[in-house]
Image (tube, rainbow, N blue to C red; front, side):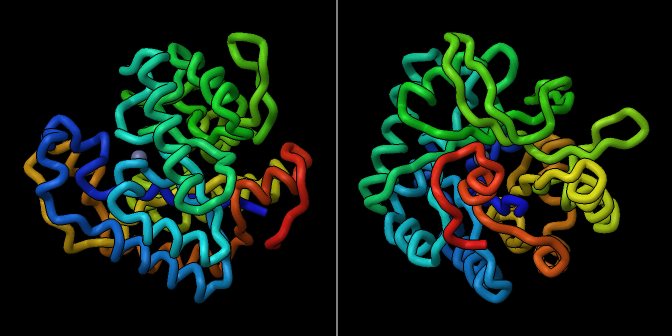
Length: 286
Ligand SMILES: [Zn+2]
């Protein structure tokens, strides 16, 4: 079972646009996260698929009813931190404080334990692996923040590609499900979703993801943001590379997602890890 995951945040939280959008302006901007997430929920319902929603604490605090609605659909609620600050720009103390705040908030809203964590913009990199120890301390069972590629903002280029239990710098261990990459001519092609899903032709994503299932005989983790199916979102003035990454093919994303859901088998990250014996418990949705 592949993991379908959603990072629940608004278009103005995105790291690619962060230099152009001051945090102080977040509350006064038009929020579209509720409607976009509800649209994803209805697509998932249509395909009878359950997903993992990594919810940003900032969003959960303002829209607790949205978190309840996601959970009521049988989906997994997991944690996307509170502030969307990059992990490697925080001290361990700051990271501990904001991650605990977000986890507590999500658990209070849903009444269920939050097991999974995903960092803002995959910012657990070699220099911030200390964050895994904080996650263990806070009781997370798994992390899905390591992108095993080279990128200007994130990535550990030679990290493991498959879900596995890994050691932390302090000698503890945590389950890691890295973002999906396909092997091609000795290279790693990021096919995990998001901007890659919008920028690459659909058949390339499909080929890459199928090769992980068939050739590697492994499940993959796929991600999307609610704003990626919202082609009429307010435009932000930003440098061309940021605009290219954020706005390319927004209008094609929903239709591609529907194709993907029809062509692959998906479930929550928690259930996928249980199925592989990496987390204790039994799979409820399969
Ligand atoms: Zn994010």
